[in-house]
Image (cartoon, rainbow, N blue to C red; front, side, top):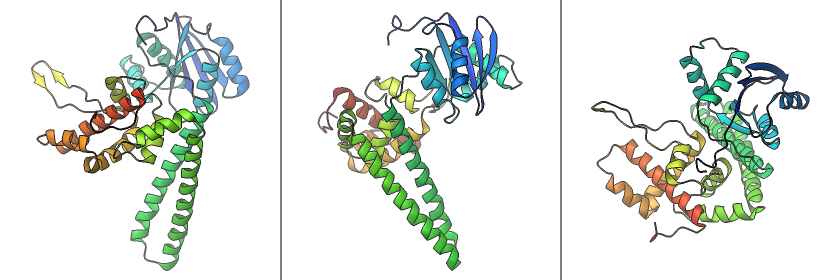
Length: 317
């Protein structure tokens, strides 16, 4: 989106989301209202908002409580930005707002919307939401299986070991079931199926990595290399002051995507000739710097594959 295409806002709003309540603060009117987190409460909230298209609404990511509200706002043609809660809290502290209540947080979010530019949230289709839930649930079960496996190594009693074994068997069955559901859902969409084939054709990228990228990084193939690296959180940030040049570090981004990208990169270092050669050129760098650079390289390659709608080609890579 070019600067000329960006919407111009005359109103700004912040909504603090909790389990039972949505607190709304609007600027420049400087008005506040609280609404129950229900369908009726949502309709009341919509009536308090300015005309759709004229207002930028900022909401914190709350682990899922915000999803229904965001979907409702986007369906009503409003522009919404979902941000990291840490950014909002740091902004409030910079304003001197050290106290924390729902009303204060809503006002801070409205001021944040008024003072900074944001990446607007796009409408998520029902299938995309289902895929995200399945991938997230699979990741949760894998984490549980890892914890049970660690407990199994420490257990000595017969009944304890038997209990852990039964739980592991159940988790394995549930993970296999989710894998089948994920494949079935991806196969039901022609675009997803084609994208999965393009991603999985890359040495080092397996079905789990490809499915996670489709679910949690739908922007892949639609952004340039710098934007996609920053979105995932593998773009190094400068730390300079005057003549001092500090060490670069990555920060922010989508941690779940970064985790699967790391595992794919570790595999690619063994079986992907392009990534292996790139890592060899960085052999004088520290190990962590080298692996992050390779993660960014692999992500850039995958982004290019989806953008050009083609499979992996070692010569072009």
